[in-house]
Amino acid sequence: MSVVDQVEATGSHTYTTHDVAVAGGALRVGVWEPTAPEATGPDGAPLPAIVLVHGITASHRAWPAVVSALPGRRVVAPDLRGRGRSNTLPGPYGMAAHADDVAAVIGALAAGPAVVVGHSMGGFVSLVLTHRHPDLVARLVLVDGGLPIPLPPGVPDGATPEELVRALLGPAIERLTQTFPSAEAYREFWRAHPAFARWNPVVEQYVDYDLAEYPPVGTAVAGSPGAPVLRPATSPDAVAADSADSARGDAVPAALAWAAETNLPITFLRAPRGLLDQPGGMYPADTVAEWLGRLPGLTASEVLGVNHYTIIMAEPGISAVRAAVTTVEG
Image 1 (spheres, rainbow, N blue to C red):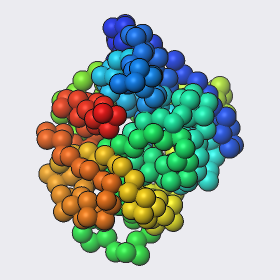
Image 2: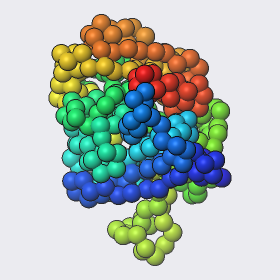
Image 3: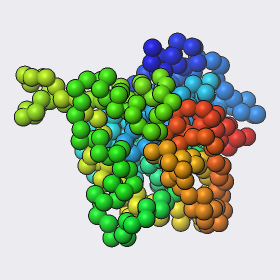
Image 4: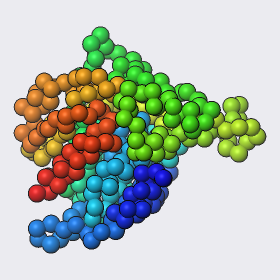
């Protein structure tokens, strides 16, 4: 039984998917409705919905473990444009486009303002969302994302978008053009990934959802004769465009400047290990310290024992995200 099914079976939430109209088509969105009594604040009013925004090659199915730690809360999580079951949506991509898509999701399904939690690239999207649509965001939590990421050593300032993608994502981008003979072969590919040494049902259901069927080679449409091709759902073009935009576009610097000027409250959770479970993480501690000095409303915590993936898929990351949401509301 997948973790998504377990969430429903345990009685904490029921899970459905919806399509929300956005520019160019429809965005797929997962919605978890609480079966427990609705959580309320000190004044007795219902607490706002929680909107979870995933990373650059991920999907809304990165989040079920976090959802299960939020009884009594309505949780909404989209597949961003170019990912998951939103992968046929055309560009333009970029942080502003994703932010506007998430704004449409909040308007349709979350009855904003909502608590917005962004992981990895989803942090950048969430920050830009807060800048462009401040009336839709009650609170902002960034999980190992949303602050400018230092380029790895040896990457020049004038690196091409392709070079940026390879430097920042490495094997995470290389897999997007690979094909796999079966779902089990794709699971085996991920089991060998150093970030997932502790394989669990959360990871397995995420990996299974990530594998999509494409028309056979040499054909253009699904249903053509021949075996379908299995490969990851995320569009490489979307990843390249979003990597360049998050590193060099105008939307993130503008949002950071606005956050500094307005003392925007931001909670940041840092994973001390990176995409490949390497020490140091995506964000060196001194980078976070620098931004604490530049953003008066920023508070930051390090979540020990997690990497860039497991901060939202395993303990103690799950509890840290839950605490960040509830602490912000306290």
